[in-house]
Image (cartoon, rainbow, N blue to C red):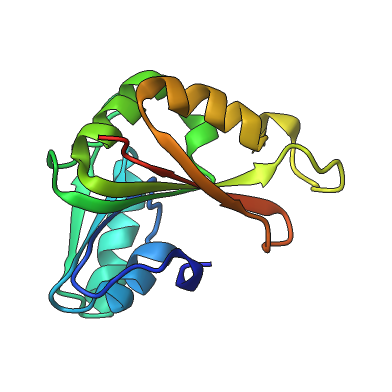
Length: 166
C-alpha cells in the first residue's frame, strides 16, 4: 500500500493517527535519512508504545507528536503527504482536523485516506467504520481539497487521494 503512494526520498510525511507506529517505521525507511516522519496520535498510551517501537528500531527521522481531537499539531506548510489509515471516520470534528491538515500541507502536498469500503457489503466491518468514496469527497472538497484518485487494490479498503488545492 505504501509503495503505491509514490513517496519520494527526503519527503516529510505525517502519519496522523499513528497508533503504535506500524506505518511510521515503514515510512521512515521510504523517506530515508534526509526525510522526516511526523507520527501523530491523540492517545498518550499509543505514543508511549510508538516511542518504544521507534527507539527499538533506532530510527532518527521520526518525530512523535501528541495531537488533540481538533488539531494534529502539524507544522504549517511543511508536509508533503498526510497519511490517515482507518482514522478519518473516527474524527469527532473532521472540519477542524482537516482544516489544520490542509494548513500543514505544502502547496503540492497530498492527503491520503485509507478507509474501509462502505460500498462493499462483504467487508466484515461495522458500518460506522466504513466510508464511501463519495462521502469522503463530499466532506473534503468543500474544505478546498482536490480529489486526485481512488485505488481499490486492497481487499477491504480504498485509498482515496486528494491534493491540498492551494
